[in-house]
Length: 485
Image (tube, rainbow, N blue to C red):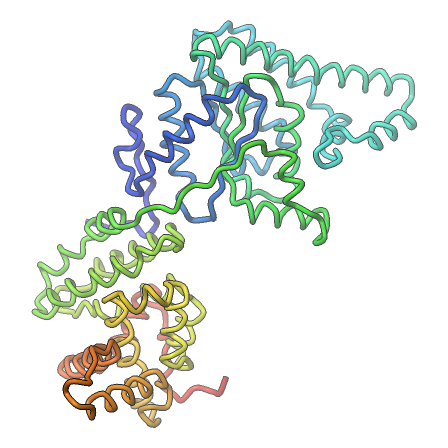
C-alpha cells in the first residue's frame, strides 16, 4: 500500500472526537472545557504550545467535544485568512457563517442578519485604519481620533460619528446573539476559537488581537487563542521594536493563559511505525538479517523519539519518510534499518550536525553530544537505546575515516576515551571491576563492525541510508577527503 509522504490529518469522529487521540490529551480537553464553560465573558483565553506539538489537531478534537457538551463554538483559522486586507472582515464573515451553522434554527435569523449588517458598516477605511493603529491595549487611539477630527470636513466628522455608532451597534448585535446562546447552552458562553495566529504576518496578527479585544469584547463571548506565545511575542517586537515589552502587551489582551501539556508519545509512535508498513517489508524481505534489524531499530526509534520536547510534526514526518523509503525498496535489497535509525534520530534532533556527519566533518563526540544534550545527560546514561546509538555512530565515523585513508581514531575522541576506561577496567582485579556503560558501548560497536563487514562496510550502509532519507538525492557523503572546516 502506498505510504503518504505528508503526515495525514487525524480523523475526528463527531460522536467520539478523541477516538483517534494518540497523544492522550482528553484529560487536558476536559480541564480546558471546565475553564471556558465557567467564564462569563468577555474574556480571552490563550492555549500556549510550541510549534509542532499538535495544537491544531487538539483544537479540532476539543471544539467538537465542546459542541458535544452543548456549547456553541465558532472556529476560525487565522492563517488561512491571512490574505484578507483586514482581519475584522475575515473574522466577521467567519462568525456569520459559523453562527448560522452552529445555531441553525435555535436562534432568530434576524439576529445573525443584524450582526452581519452592522459588520458591513464597519468595513469602511476610516474606522479600519483607526482600529489598526490603536495604541496597544487601549483601543482606538486618542491621537488617531484627534487627527481624524482635526483634518475632517463636516461630512468626514459625520462619517466618523456614524462609524463610532456602527461599533456600538455591532457589539450590541453580538451581545444579543450571545444572550440567545446562553439560553440554549445552560448559561455558558459563545466560544470563538482562533488557531494559528502565531503563523500570520505580524501586522495581521496584531490587528486581529486588537479586533478580538476591543470590537468583539462582549459579555457572554469567550475567545480562545491557540498560540506559540514566544513566537507571537517575536512578531509583536518586529513591529514595535526589539526593546518593546511584548509580554506586557500580550497580558493586556489575554485574561487566562494555560499551557497544553507535553504529549505522551509511545502510543503515537507505535501506531505510526505499524502504519508505515515496516513489518510488511520485513516479512517479504529475502535478507534474513532484516528481522533482527527491524526488532532492534524499532525499539531504538520508539525510545529515542518519545522525548516530549521533540517537535511532533517533525517526528511524524521523519517516520512517514521512512515508510516511503521502505516502500521503494525491492525484496532483494537490504533494508539498512540500523543505519536508517541513525539518520532518522539525528535529523529529528539536530539537522545541522546530521549534515556535518554525512559531509564527513563531524567527530563522534559532537554527534553523540548533539543528541545527548537534548535528551538529558542523566536519562541518557540510564537508557539502553543510547548505547546502541553511540556504538552505531562510532562505527560509522570509523568507517568514514578508514575509507579516506585517515587514522582510525582521527574523528573518534569519544571512542578513544571509552577504550581507555575499558582497558583500565580490564586490568583491574576481579573484585574491583565495575559494570561500565562504556564497556557496553564498545562491545556493541565491535558487534556492529563485525556484522557490517559481512555485507557492506558500515560507512556504505549509512551512505545509502542517508541518500534514501533524502529521497534519492546525490550522495551527501563525499568519497574525496573533505576540505578543512
